[in-house]
Image (cartoon, rainbow, N blue to C red; front, side):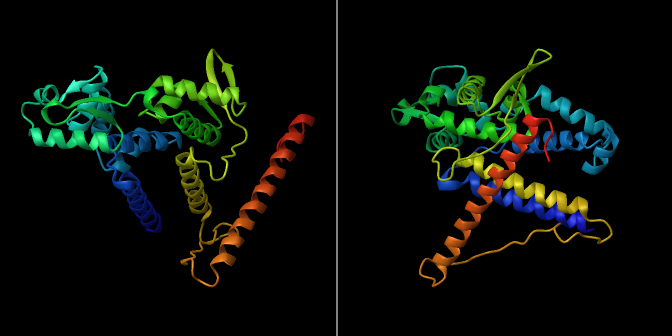
Length: 309
């Protein structure tokens, strides 16, 4: 029962987080792919835990036939071609330099033109597309790689570093699967940038390119890469909860199994505001120093053949 409550609570908080992030600053990030992505990735993670197809189908509450049919339907009809108008318009614009409003509306004769115009406006406001002209003369094109500022590569590179470090190894194909909204050129450029900066190591194993990142250090306060830092934070919390749940056996808990959660609900005029802020800064600095010592010890042990402690 408690595990069910835990899963329900985590899903709820994850949905709240996604909703908040997707609407940050008034933006409206497309979410049509989420249902497909959740099923595919959750099923894959369950398989990696050694569960069979029948068990996973039972966990989803569907028949084994339906379980096998769903991935097949996803492959035959990917999100960009499903009945989501946003993704269909994106797919339409991907194949041409630009398109006029009337031309786009003509592609969907059974759809309310006002809905199409509204989605086009959302794409422009959320940074997915550019618009030139107004009204009926408006033309649209998707944002291209060369439209993004220099921080774009840095942001993608930071996200790739998090993915590579947390998975130990990552291939180029896996990187594309993890970042489906990015074209292969952007991912390749970011990987090359990381390799040139010696932040990742590229290896060729059995003819396949593999990337590794033994140490993850995202600079504090860096303008680009904040999204990668948030993903890393979220994964750290997720790993902590998962480890605590797995260690819980018959209420026999070691003292260090659970962490403590502290909330400081303070305004800047609170008399203890500076003290709390300085305490958190000291904790971050001390933890960073300890992490550097651990990394240095591991490096020394590796060079002497002792292995990682």
